[in-house]
Image (cartoon, rainbow, N blue to C red):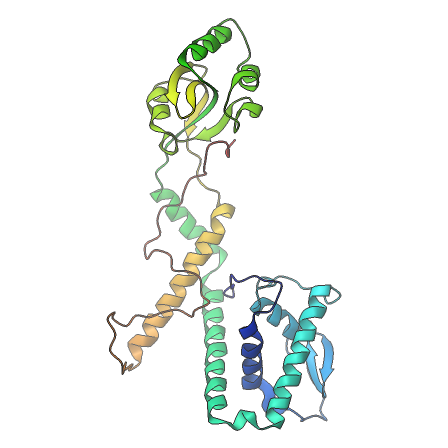
Amino acid sequence: MAVVRPFRSTQMPKGLLLAGLIAAAALGLSACGKGGHAEHAPERGDAAVAKVDGQTVWSSDVKREAVAQGLIGEGEPLDVSSDLFRRVLDQVVDQRLLAGEAVRRKLDKDPAAQRRLAAARDRVLGDMLVESVVADAVNDNAVRGLYQEQLKLAKRSEEIHARQIVVATAADGEAVKKLLASGASFEALAMEKSTDAATRFNGGDLGYFTVDVMPEAYDAALKTAKPGQVVGPFPVEGGFAIVKVEDRRTEQPITLEAARPQIVRFLTYDQIRDLLEKLRGRAKVEVMVKTDAPSQAVPPADAPKALPAAPAPLPATATPGAKK
């Protein structure tokens, strides 16, 4: 599994073209002008999509550039007949032309260029190593294993499904309760009388929620309320609330598929961190400048943001009105 870069844009940033040129030169411009032999597709199912001064541009070259720009995700298909493919192909051709001209002018022999080419080569090879390590370690079994561990750690609270009607005064609230006691529909009264714009047109429905995400007044009022019970009116922001408890249940855990992206990010970063720690442990690294902070193994700049060393319990599903 490759490290997916989060940057997404429909236009190439200014620095990206230069970076692409440097990387292209570092990896293949020494072959410029060398022809006369049959070329083989670099990847299975690859197709030649252009020629630049005799050099083949493969569909995989275009897809790799699209991934580097954040236009598609790693492993995501890119139709060769699409406008996006053609735009990126044009950019790859431009890169080849500019890089080829740079070599013709012997800019690649400049010491500064050599250092930048070496740095580009290091970045590419480092990325390939990371991708290889992550692909081996971040698999479905690892994802499922961590998910099951997190389910054991997660504390599941009680959820309440409730509806509310918010009115201006306590007297208005008592009047609503009398109408409910006489058989009026809670949903109909919510649409007619509630001042809460977020819930009135949904029959006052708050969905499933845990009381810790609600103002304290709801916690106190609903703590012992049973399904079917109407409580209130009690003061809330914007007036007084009358709340009907529809159901109480144990909080539902997040599903594996919903948790998968978070788990993959954690496992990916964990593998990168472990790899760098092992490499630094075997190498002799001398820092020649003084720094305030101690040296640490740091993943590539485009790696996912760090997750906690010990993953926090998976969150349960979420907010009032969002869960059914």
